[in-house]
Length: 316
Image 1 (tube, one colour):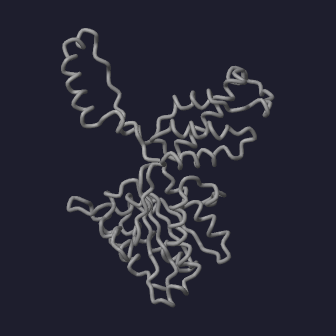
Image 2: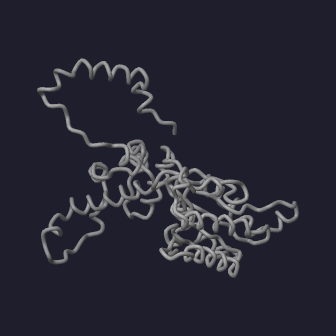
Image 3: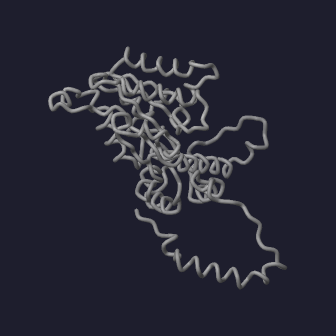
């Protein structure tokens, strides 16, 4: 995994980072503490939550922290689908090879992104290959002893799709939920993304923007900042889109303003909204009068169950 972002480049996930340090880095760097008190160090940690909330980002930063620590910790990253093969027995061999590599380079962290594709729930209708892969992964994780100095981390958007046998203590000891960021977390994330800009937005505007981005994940906020920059470029230099020649762009003239962020927000659809918004057609002028009374009755019932204040309020 090639990245230069460490934990200091992540905003809004301070509690998650502290838990990762305690569950992953601490046992690998200070294993003698567990030996002294006869404790079993954790073997696995499972990240889960909506898309774009920082699961893979935290794992990427963990890889950088491992390389920068006093005691070097190896980091092996694989997508869940990378371990699957169309040949019988090849998927199990790939898994065995990963754990063998970890044994040879311990202390080591193994990270499986989209682990639900590697270890889905076993059912009677499932083919033999997937069931065999899940059984192999369970056996390999059970084979890690207290002194193996190997920790397995998994990440998934679908916790219910993972085989329940993986979620018991001794395999994935801890499950860490990554929610959509609250107001304070969104403000921290936006501050991280604009901290290297020469002309940063005002602190008050960052707070205002955070209040207007309810439902945005970390990746959505990053995309919003990138789109705002492009809106600023289009506003100052529209000719670069119609000319084939390369134009000189004055860096000092590029100041991302409120109008750029507002325009960018119109084109960014948060990942959490894409699965819930269903485009529908408005009622035609001829049909609307016929259904008007029914619609008002339905709306009054809905507002009685979910008042407008409940729908718009948010716990910071």
